[in-house]
Amino acid sequence: MSKEIKNITIFGPGMMGSGIGIQFAQKGCNVILRARAQFEEDYAVENIDRNIKDMIENDCMTVEEGETIKKNIKIIYDINEAVKDADLIFECVIEDMQIKQDLFKELDEICPENVILATNTSVMSITEIASKSVHRHRIVGTHFWNPAFLIPLVEIIRTEDTSDEVVDAVYDFLKDAGKRPVKVNKDVPGFIGNRLQHALLREALYIVENGIADAATVDEAVKYGFGMRTPVLGPMEHADMVGTDLSLSIQTYLLKHLASSTEPSHILKDCVEGGDLGFKSGKGIQEWSPEEVAKSKRRLNDHLLKSLKDRQ
Image (tube, rainbow, N blue to C red; front, side, top):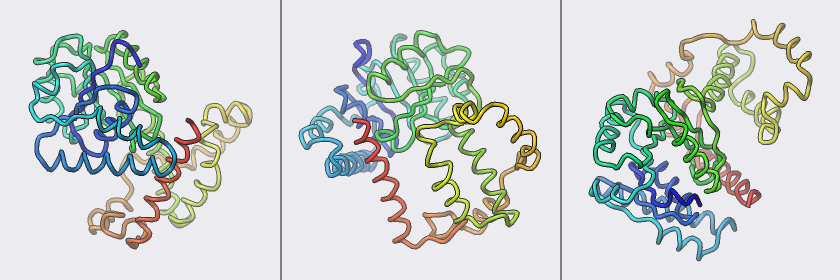
């Protein structure tokens, strides 16, 4: 672990916050989850226990390592007590700009200037989140992907105010902790991963809207086609592999036929207006029985656990 960063405090002990806590507690950090109420503490404990159990059952850690994680995590309610020894603070609260701004303003006021403040927002402007704070050079974006303890990627987003020292310190710390950090040089909406993910979703929805294929077929084409090679072959490397001349030829012909709308798909709008919210309601773009929902979630979790085991 980085010598400079040992004590971690996490605001928002929900799915993301508790998952991030597991990651760093496993690597020997002292982790504090700041909770505001008993229900938040209960959720965090339940989530941590369940995830540790899954990893033990899938041979990703030993029982002893699981117990060490639990010992390295404390849940504290008082904000001043939670941050008093922190080297690095991760914010994982609700995606509400004012709530995030006010929290960072408060943390900026009560924490020594050498404490790094990081937000786990998935799409919001880090610059705007930091706008009410004075020491904006120590505020940075760290976008973990859910589940945070299984997916290696963390996007480190800098603003014009973020210092090189803070970006480098967070990068080195995350790398030492077993993550796969990448530096995002500009604070743009969606950063890298969500821009790519939603560009794909826009085209997928366009294909369904225009009767080219149904939703299940689109998913099949991704999962059993180019999606199988994406873990080892990204789009830029693939362009070089097939040749930039062929990539140029394909784009010259194809791009004018692809979706280019700047408005959300009417499929999504119709679903939301009709109360069809996906897994949570049993119907979204497709219909889902409780058994199918459980199977899908289990399949994803098993895949990620296997990937973790293969990396160890």
